[in-house]
Image (cartoon, rainbow, N blue to C red; front, side, top):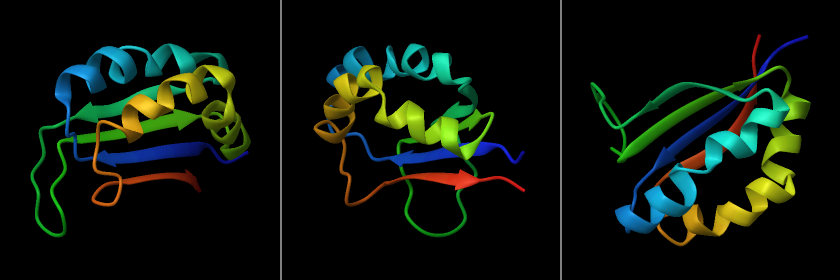
Length: 99
């Protein structure tokens, strides 16, 4: 079964609230669904397109589990801290199915 991936590219507007109320809690929200952070950085070698403050890739056992993770009550409780403390029109947040 192909794995599922969450890709996040975030332009943060309020670092303190984003970090305390989203960044510090998101890993535990995804863990019950097998979510494993494989990239979580602001350090890049940027070549094209928009540059964001934070880049994240989370691997899940399947796309279905990735979907369940972002729809879970634990994630929904912290999601407003990502949305309200970042420029969601600038960044990107998506789920992809692996090969």
